[in-house]
Image 1 (tube, one colour):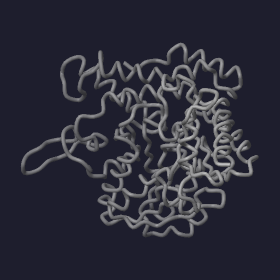
Image 2: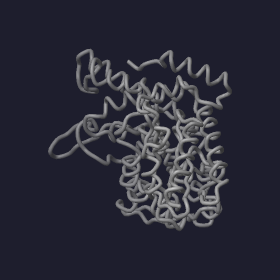
Image 3: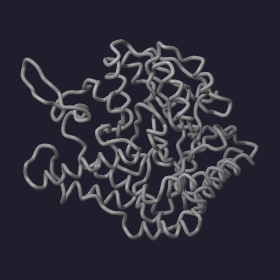
Image 4: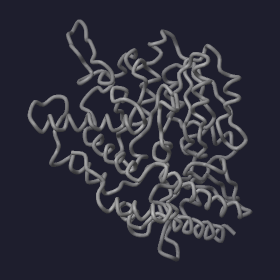
Length: 419
């Protein structure tokens, strides 16, 4: 049921490789219907546009192939169940894990909530977690809701999680360290193996928020030495409403269910219920069948292009945009020079929302630019930076130099408007 990479993608990849990966071929960009009409989309960190291969896989799963999973004895249900579990295996291979270590969830937010509520019952006490200043709200609020004691690791001057400070802060009281693998605002990349070593030294586990990492960096959970890894499908060129929690099998096996209902049970009576083994015990209710098929297609798509090639492509664009913005005397840049796919900045005398609104208006060349403007679900980081909001341009595998040129023209138009 899972579609192979279509010929247009293979042709585009061949051309991309022949050109050294520096310029994304138009043939690849054309596979994203959402980019039609001269729209310059620079908000991929919020959600990625979808290639036709993913759209087709989703439509097929919702139409000709559709049936429930894990329930029906008829052929189509059995086939869909096979495809659903094949998608789990594909997710596992994508990040270097095993199929029985992958839980399908609605997204990274649900995954972190699951761990925050279930894992304390493994250690038999309330948790103490070390977060960092740059975390997304989805890696802050769940720990608070679940009653964890929260400590906060500072950042280095260039916007990375300060692991030297983390080493000084961690004690045997900490049961969890939860860091962003890549910051959704600054694009800074965590030294995950060192973070894992520091966490494990005091007996804590390491959870990595991989939402911004999996679309642009090769991920191997064994090499990272983490204990939990979470990501959302819609940032990986897949559908919304689907994501994955990877966890070491011994941890999943020890964790109790977080939600109850169909699928996750072994036997139910009014006196007592027993539960299915992991990962099934964490997937209550009818699963997101269609979305899982779309996620499988998205992983096939980016894997066919190669994460290393995607990262190199985005890194070149980040470097170009940072150089262009640094040459202006009215722009403040945030984050490290080698940020992964993301450039956050502020324009003197112009609120990011005003900049974003003007960029969205059609310019003299008939095009518009979409960026993110606001606190990016990272209000503690905004306070640390001393701003209420930033403008953020984030690249995807379909981005190219024309997007940068359109953004720069829009910034110049904004400056003329504000004087």
